[in-house]
Length: 111
Length: 115
Image 1: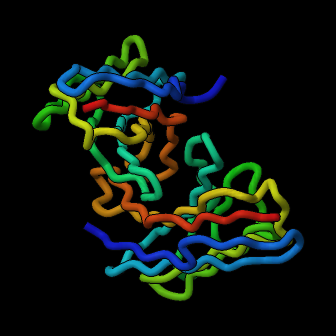
Image 2: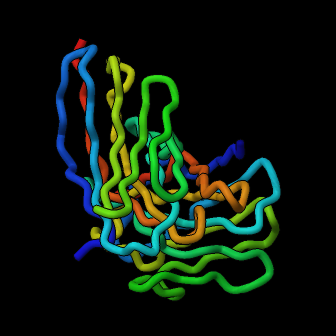
């Protein structure tokens, strides 16, 4: 079993839609939960970061962590064509060190 | 935030040859990480490059295949040795800033194609 599972998609939505991206993980020892965004031919960039459980909101983006079910989510409201990218969930025990990435979900937002 | 430059950005190589990828950071960092991103797959950590000591390799990766240098706090190299088509991948250098935030900064990657 992989330590983090993520549906690779692709996921195609119309502009303005609410997007839900999800990952599951297997080990309850993970404390740091991140979402990275990767545009084509670019390196990943950190989008959202959460320590332990709960929600975190930043503009149109909301990250949720449910440690009881080992489930992490990223919601994008009012999606835009510029949101078209690959979104990778990531988990870590020790904050950046030995970060484990999900497979990434390719998102296409159609104008 | 750290700015990371990688060279080359892409290359096409012949089977059996070796290629060295360079990573330059605009600030001093303790640890630098090398990741591999194979086509359609996620990022896999190859090794952690420590300044002044040997690199620490993850399971499945060995020094003979992926030798790493870390001569100072702003620079590292990764060599992919005796390449085969299976080594065709994007290789990414990254650093972490702020020990409590967990944020990784990445270079734009080096896209290798092995024929």
